Amino acid sequence: MIARTCCLFLALLVGAPALAQSGRRPSAGPAADGEVRLEADEVRLSVRVHDAGGRPVGGLAREDFIVAERGERQTLVSFAAEKAPLDLVLVLDASPDVYSDLGAPPKGDRPVPRVQEPSIVDKILGPPPQPPPIRIDRLADLAFARRVARELIGRLRPGDRVSVLQVSEKVELLQDWTECHDDALLAVNWRFRLSSGSAVWDALYLAAEDRLSAAAGRRVVVFVGDGVDTASRLTSSEAAAALDRFGASLYAVSPAEAARAAAGRYLRNEGRVLAPRRRQAERTVDALARAETEVRALTERSGGAFYALRSEADAAAIPSTMFRELGGAYSMSYVPTDPARDGAWRPISVYLGRPGCTAVTRRGYYRN
Image (tube, rainbow, N blue to C red; front, side):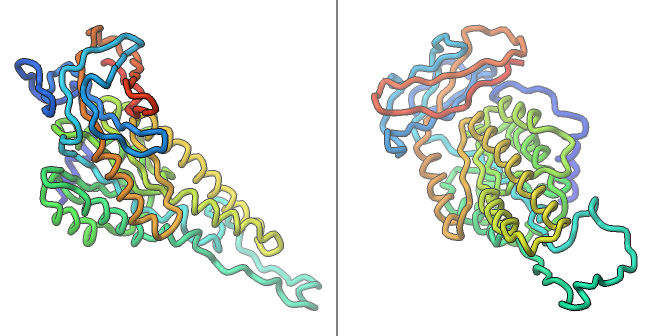
């Protein structure tokens, strides 16, 4: 465990070199349908297709897809429908920071200790009622993150690989790549533990740069947490660039919306919320809103999806929905007609020959 954690941090401290889009050796000749075989310069895509009702659409062929980069049509060199195995990095937030009791003022607002005489009102009526410390929401408990993780791992298919990271003030490798899903369950049940701080952007960067740099299957990162970052050395933009570089789709399961709603109910208790607690609650709501916006933007940019964890039932329903989406995804790749590595952003568009259907994939990448 110590050696694995050290290796993970080394990648962050010294910076991993920019790697090819695939991280795999060149192959000879085009790949047949149903097989994804990548060359060094190929751009890989995982494309989900929905009908007008939002349901996954299967049974499509290579001819149903048109892929464009910078508005110019590209030739698909590989295509596979619903068969490519997953390389999934599960990133679990172990920090309770924004969910800690609102009953204590934050560090920056702690008053100078002093003896305070009771007011005349207090002498007559007694001290004002003190609102009890609250947990913002039960969905913050690690038990829910653990349950979501178990549901996700339980839906992996034979041949799918999984690796598990824990996020706190540092990023820890709980489970290296394995096709033995019971090993991943063991890591979630026994190694995932409460910790302090939350280096979310560092973790997403390392999930792509360290974990997925040489992955052969469809590259997926699943983040379970509210997204509030308190400890990263990197930014959300650097995490996004790493996801772009390795063609990884980010899926997020977030309790931020439910936590904001609970904090809002707390704030609406006008007569009982003391000023220091009110300021802390307001900052909590703002932090949760910003985090949700940033994480949602990353999922959309990478062609993944954002799921709001609103109730206990969602802990089972969301993984089911997610894997229905992943199971209906199409894997394909192309070699850009413009081979220049100019470092510029290259937008990607996918069009379908089926009316009423919509394709979802990553929005583009930087050609470095």
